[in-house]
Amino acid sequence: MTWTYQLTIPSSLNQQSIRACLRTWLIPKRIQGQLRQTRRIQLNGAPTSIAQLVNTGDRLTLTFIPSDFRTPTSNYIAAATAPATILYQNSDLLVVDKPAGVKSHPNQPGETGSILNDLAATLQPTQQVPYMVHRLDQMTSGAMLVALNPVVVPILDRLISDKQIRRTYYAWVRGHFTTPTGHFTAPIGHDATDKRKRWVNTADAQPALTDYEVCATTAHQSLVKLTLHTGRTHQLRVHLAASDHPIIGDPLYDSQAESAPRLMLHAQLLDLQLPFSTTRVTVPAPLPSLFNSCLLYTSPSPRDA
Image (cartoon, rainbow, N blue to C red; front, top):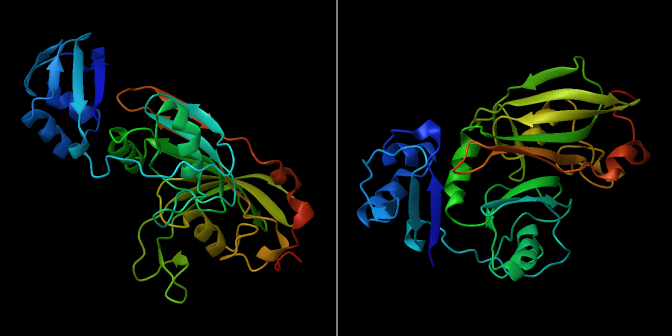
């Protein structure tokens, strides 16, 4: 199996070396070296050197093989529990609307019931397969990014780490904020008292940054828009709980979780740069209807009661 990309050089890369082009496209150095050593780079149909300069409109062909990648194959069992709702798709990636309560991926070999199993079944007629890029907690719904080949997995990983893929969430939380906008900056690490949990300012805490904006309030709750700038485990859940505004229905951080039907957290928007391109796309995931009737299922926060 091979994956071949035929790329037209844009004006922004005119008179750049092929090495510079590969660097701009965020192809890892290890893979750049393998492309060079095995002569799998062609310019306008002829083998070429990685040092060769290119011109606007030139055709660059890159051929990738399984040994280029740490995970060249997708091994998710195609077994759908429900049809997957695809919000956006091109030849390299898709964004799926993950339901609350569905795992992002299997935890054990042979396991099914995850959104990646659903996608494997949905994509089967097209002979495409899903590759995991980032995950949502099982109880979180909304937009989740999935690769469709191993070539773009490290590129998307790098775009995430470089903050070129922006993720926006909405959450119903307990209580009211003193300011309508703000930032959570407390570092996050493992909770020494409960291995399932994370908390702020722990011994192994790492930097974490979340922006918030209050969108609506009721007598005892607030609907907040949240923007992730880092990707720590449980980051939104921990930052909100540590600020005394736990997400409603959070079984780990909300002491009144049993009064809610689910974790009221939804990944509402992905804003991403497409691989091998300067094009950006914005993919929204509609808010679940339950978010409009949150008060029917919640009780006052202790400090508001």
